[in-house]
Image (tube, rainbow, N blue to C red):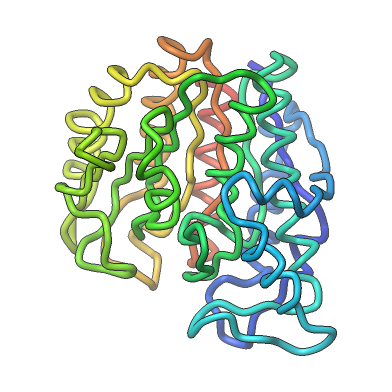
Length: 311
């Protein structure tokens, strides 16, 4: 099984204020974890710089221009209370889009079987016209629309196991029944969305939320995915499965209160790969979202990529 790893040094140049949990050290920890012999067979490519217009797939041009204009020449600028930009943020955000679309291209054309994109800033909180939650552009949603536009994908699913609900992806997909979003997440927790009764415009069912309670662990997580999300995903029959791969539901993570381990992320990866095998010729693209304890993040990503590579 050929797995693509997408990365670029510019992702380290998206700086955040001292003490911010979404920091460049996250990618350094991932890089160290994937340097061992077990991962030598990874196909590795650098994320290309996407034109700003590629973000128009999920965001209006005025919003994209507003983010571009906000990028500072030095220091930091606050976009909201916990989302900021540094001089390197604009390039990092566009390379994240470019890297995600590259992964979609290579998976959809059969050059690789699946891909993991080790990129930042994350994206799943970015709504159509609002940056928030450390996110500027919604990379996963852009990649889903790119799969449809460039490769004729008729149905694309984004499955999100970040501990925080991906309100941005839900917002962007809400009235688009050919695009499916499902999430396991802690509730109550930031950003306050993701209730079971949020199912898409006119209850279309293309939105599936499976919230978990603080303190939940392996059993509740696996039940939510296996009993609620997978049946809906199989009914939807995606042509491509995109994973919003956040690892902050790990028991070590400081920003939430779920108790998952790296074994749970490996199991979830294999479960989603099985769905992709049944409906999408195995096509899976995984995009890094959260995960803020460096040890928990590194071990979880290693388990996730191991599952992508070896099943």
